[in-house]
Image 1 (spheres, rainbow, N blue to C red):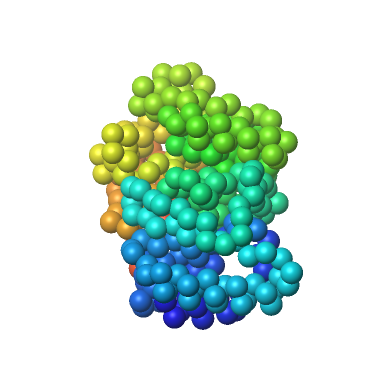
Image 2: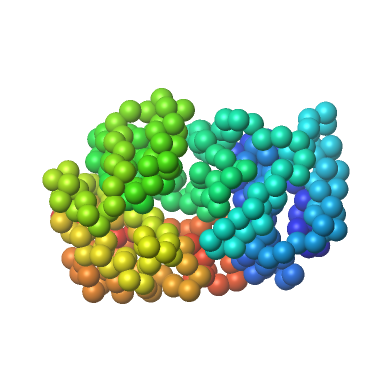
Length: 305
């Protein structure tokens, strides 16, 4: 845990939601199971392996000492999540968590929830992806966007803030889309629709809504009974040419340490050869990894005019 404690001793008071320590990247031996995120005004410590009460106490004391220096007089709020790939337990360790809890990123506002569930409403590793979508929309004002596996619709917020005319958000989890609707209200944005459907039984409706200038797909890499990347991503990719406008873009995301960027490039070459690979987007610096092929892959493709 020493690398994490050393980082805590240098922390600044955060403004935006962001990751500040990424042990899972393998750059901090002995801390591969740990991550520290800022969801102001709350810190979130996540562990993918059991952590002793003694180590939690050491971390809490170090964070308290630093907080007294960078935010004198303000209460320290932090949450600990013990998790694996399918379940989590969340504990409030100090202070409190606002309800509702709203955080900022690049001027946008998002609702998050740190005390329940596996995920929190905003994937911090996708920050550069959201920036790219916002910038794309700024360069393509009036663009039409399809956001698949939309979750809480953060990509939709980015697109509309950039100048997109309409975004269609699709996710089979209606609760996630309700959070997405609240996010749009938080940002006073209009132009979005919210479709609580199973993607694989909704192609006809999407084809009627097409063509789109940008299609975003950010599926789970493995969600039992819903989506398994090795089996199901091909079913998404082969539909892209009929959904995209000529000159349109597809932003395909994959967050699996087992599957590298070659998986997506080969899949597109096989299932949608009309699409041209453009580039892989960089991940936030805080998510540096000893092997970038294990980290988040955000890949941009284009359907030539």
